Image (tube, rainbow, N blue to C red; front, side):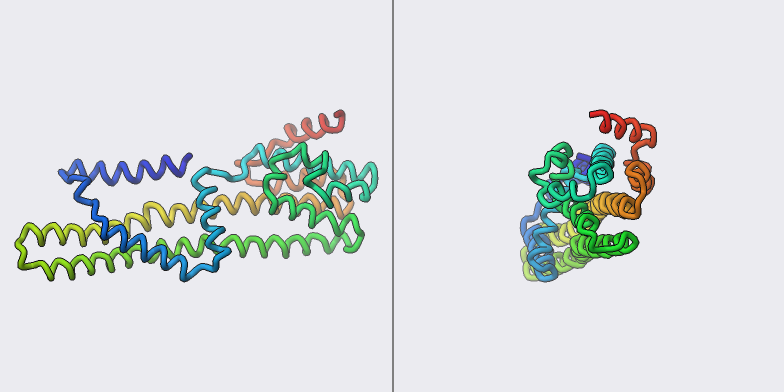
Length: 286
């Protein structure tokens, strides 16, 4: 929602200022300039991106527009799930976690926390972290390094769409100049048609420059930054899981392991210590 509000502010401010200066918005509508700039920018993105990254860019733009990022409620649910998992492992032995970790989609425990089930990457990261603990194939001190390596790989992978959108954003002013030059060529070819025609074509050419800069700094680069913030929230989820699972594997009490994870969160999404303690005590009674 905030992205849409920001887009409305950008467009309204630009057109409003133009109209206050006596301009007419319809003067800015030159289809040829939109075709050149939109087409070249799309071509640049296609040339620069592997197919799987193109799909990821579309998915992340959609998520950015709909403002789908992890909030305080999701982190609260995640911490409660981690506590329940750790308590089950402490009381019934680590083997009791196997049925939940191996098939989380059908797990009665995971089904209580749909926000995690709806994010396959986070779910897979949690299960991948718990499997070596259950199997006993890795020493507790080595688990954090293993999960940290996986987290770094995911962070690097998530940066590809952001880099490509910044590439397009940085290219758009230059693409606008290309559209303007094409417009000037058309203008010079029609110079004998009189000042009225020449003026109209010069205006169309200048619109190309304007459109390239406007799209770059008004939309493409800001969207790339919003995607980066959304990715950071997801990485924080993964870091939270890593801290908790690694602490539990080292023998920390479930509440202590979860508290370490809680303290690793940003203040904007961090549940209060007392709030979390009350919630997990209620889980113990249920």
